[in-house]
Amino acid sequence: MIDPMIEIFLIAAVVSFATNLLRRKLMGPEDMAKMMESQKFKKELLEAQKKGDKKALQRLKRKQEYYRKIDAEIGKKNMMMLFASFGIFYFVFMVILTPLYGSLNVVGTLPGGLVIPLISTGDKLTYIGWYILSLLATGLPLGKIFQAQPKLEQSPKEAERVGQKGRNEVPR
Picture 1 (cartoon, one colour):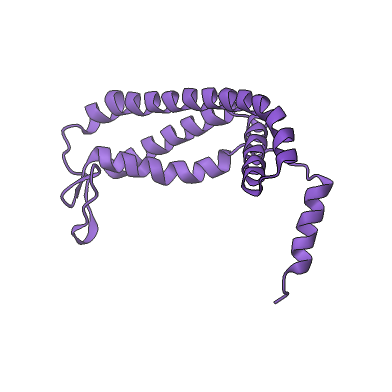
Picture 2 (cartoon, helix red, strand yellow; picture 1 turned 30 degrees about the vertical axis):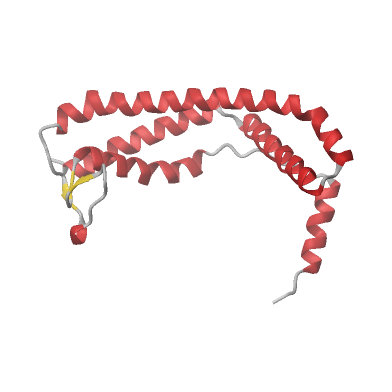
């Protein structure tokens, strides 16, 4: 018989894998590139506002509607992903974990009397607490593995700026 902590951890790993796979399918590299492009635009707009550069502000304001549409499109996909993740989390919790481990009040003890609100009862780790910790422990590394990275092309202006930064740094 497998230890309940290991079983719950494996279930959490499968849930993390499923949600990250879903994110990868829903948010492709082109969506990630659009999101990065929008963030870059917002940064440029903020810098122009701080400097009071009216010419740059006029130029950027013309593009603002385009980036609002991109933000709305990406935001819609992020909301879909959020609801899908909650759905998967809740389904696994209610259909798999509660019937299997609902009668098990404690799956482990936290070290040194550590208390984690919503995760533990006193220093006792509940099955739902362990499930949440396991989701975090597996979700973060899997998120890095599954992350859709766009290929970015550097503009000549950016390449020049990066080159100047490198020349101005003091070698060690």
